[in-house]
Image (cartoon, rainbow, N blue to C red; front, side):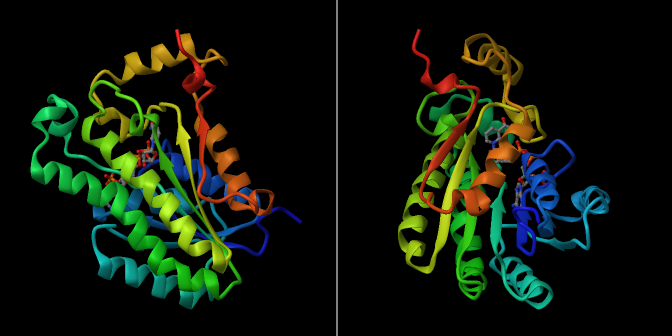
Length: 257
Ligand code: NAP
């Protein structure tokens, strides 16, 4: 029997086959989980439905994470179909393109609000909605995705770095509150990976190159490496870990000069 056999998971943040959330979905499905995948808006529906066709009896649901109503509808469908929830993967993030090219000091009030809403508050909203479904199973595991730009300055990462700092603090506060219900909340801080979201960050290819040159493992992070770490945190092997930011970046973050 595989590690996640009999478990049900909700995966938010699949845009296409390069999405980190999709790699995690595949790893969780390979480990035996049944999944619900969400898509943001009609533009991505076909993509996500095509990918989901590879999974065993998936649920595919719309969810714009800025809408409390859509979040409530997703959880109602999950409860109806799965009768509860064992894990949630949160891989949604967004900042308006101009905020990732202009100097950080030019960040607009609206750009700041949108980036923090989609990329950080959504974890709080989704976790609040998922918690009763997890509690009914005797506990659960929530996992989000973050980046080292939360602590260090990376050119052009700008307001997304601020959003990731808020996201990581939210992981700790949620973990502190939900631990007594046996609900764990963690994040994986991934090294840079060429995805749709990454394409919006100016100079991304150079960031990839610097990581390849300086990371102890001398290569870029692969989505499969993030997915394997995710499977560990989602399953029973990670049962003692909560409130943690696990860095999967080939060791880049330990290096000085
Ligand atoms: P991705 O494939 O573009 O995934 C980002 C997802 O967020 C997309 O599905 C996107 O949909 C979704 N999203 C944006 N706004 C949303 C909204 N309002 N409601 C629901 N979903 C929304 O890129 P990714 O790199 O795999 O990103 C996944 C996570 O990993 C993000 O949190 C990202 O910050 C994090 N991360 C990425 C890297 C990297 O280098 N790629 C490194 C560390 C951490 P749309 O396409 O419609 O906007």
